[in-house]
Image (cartoon, rainbow, N blue to C red; front, side, top):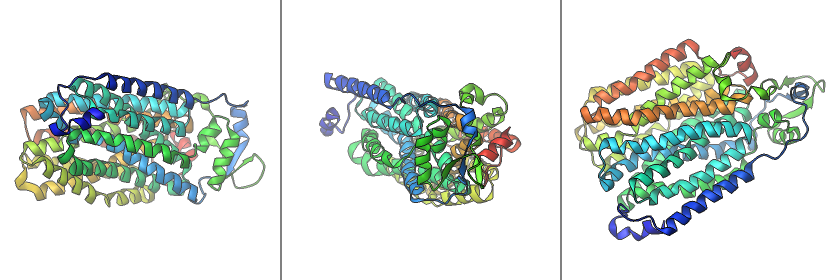
Length: 505
């Protein structure tokens, strides 16, 4: 970081500067620290546990009918901040691309390798962290992802473009880890009657809030400190998540599935839920989906009865990834190529994200109180129509500010609704042993779309600048996702996780 601040008189440009011994030592220290932290978070041997037979004798009193307690609100507040931070990190890519292209002298195709590297990392992170969440727990995985957030702030001090690619891959690994864990933890902790609208509201606020934070920092800081300063936000935001982790209890369903009954009892007591033995009283609910730990693993996601859910959420995530990383990420670049200045495009996107915030209330209400499946279909269809609107705009730029603003607001609202529902829906349609890995796969599928989209978008823009061709091509996967969701999607609104699991079977 010292080298970056020392370059202030050069406009914070580090291109061509050597990698110093201090930088190498710092990177090695980061690797050692992450390794030690990972070892410290590995679970200790569990107490003697008789598995499925013992779980079958345990029931909890009205978990899905429990009222929201202060402990629920503490958890939801912290996880909302975590979601915003998680979204902000990769969203920053779109705002550093123009400055990076100028400093390194990159073509559009070369610049597209940056989001490709970051998104490859997020895909790996989603799968790895989904598996880790199933092994070491949701809370420990959040801590580890937060440490990586802090470590990858070093992206901002890499002098060579190749080093930037490598470090941004690891940035993607950290960003990919948070999303599946947060949604699995929320789905397993929030009562069924509140789960739908609360989880989606948090997802929507996180998606829009993260983009709002990224665009706001770009508009506020980049004109004065250059594009590199945007990467440095990972340091304080990661530290904030570590501090806030004290208000994040482990998932009670995960603890029960792992046989840690005493810890689960303490967590559930905070939520107003009583764990009792079978026959201790009436009004008790079977533990249901926490009974078979041996069902975990990615292979299980692709076998009956879960293969149809995997196809549905996988295509839905892939479609959103194409839209977000193939269109929204390139919006600043397309706008600048169309005659809109970098500062003006940053302000336009920031104001559009701000206006889109109230839309999260609508999607949360519809998902939680009307229909999860129908709401997902409505927002995906709206995304397609908005992209068609951009395509009709062609190469419109500075002269079409009003139309651009409307379209950007609509796109951020509709696509934000799509991603805010993907992870909550995924967490609902899989049982506890598969919830972490399933959520990781869904998050990974959205990043696979991102891995494919940047190169595709760069190629399209090289031959057909403007919105027309790229808008139509990016919209196509969403059309396919809508068709599959219509045919195979499950309704989850107002239903307990156990009930949804029985329907899936």
